[in-house]
Image (cartoon, rainbow, N blue to C red; front, side):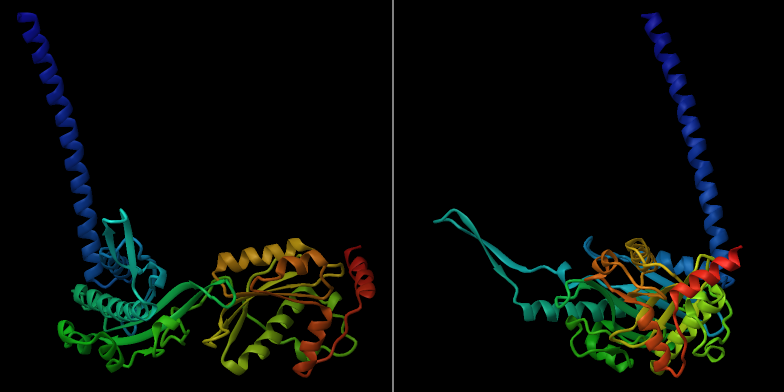
Length: 383
């Protein structure tokens, strides 16, 4: 009996020691967490850019929606004008319920479903998008106790399958810029969401469910540290210039200049990235056209041999990684059948040497492509 008591006492003492350890660990974690929160609060109240972004991310992540709704967004804050830009992913229309009710038919011992009509689903989708927009802007303004935000530019995007092509597209379907002092004066409990959105000069098609792309009022900056300073080349070439034998750096800037002329009529912009010296070059075009536009990856190959499928696969991988809408591959040579086969049905365009010369002529420049001569000249340079 006494031995049992001693064993119980030892176990109790051991449990107390273990409990004290857990308690101390908990209190330490609690203290560390509170210190971190205090530091974050101080940094936020002093209107540190990174802290403002982090704080706004917390606000958006704490917003409760059904599990089927995506919680993907991108934020940018401009401290000079105190504008917060929000690129926000809306749920696709497929996320909305289609079943109206389910009845049990006792005589048949079966369940009978009735469905919501397509027009009702479209109306439900439109109404939800306007409500999500106004709710999100309200939550950010209401949480802005540091008065760091004077305006919010909200762009709503939807990823959906284009039924005409079968390909997934990501389109901006509404855009609005709201001033804090004006927005907080609105009684959201009594407004019609669409009317309120229009009154705030929001931009969208008449039916959001059509997923018609629109041009955002203000977008996140597309400045990329990979971009390099560009220079003009096109005016230095003539009928005697063999593009396939050009200096690799001159060739990359020629391509940038050529596509800049191609996109500039619609307000587009083309920038060259840091390239490797393997005859290849990357450039990125930003086309603001609401229908065909978006981010376009351009790769050029100063090749003297037929371009194989691996180069096309690499381009497609880059398009996916960059989140681009399209990829363009330009070569001084031609492509093999496997390359053309891989590109079919994908958002890829392959331009061969003849296409490149035609594009140059279209913009008032002339050159030549002589692959045999280029091979000889490049071999002499390597010696």
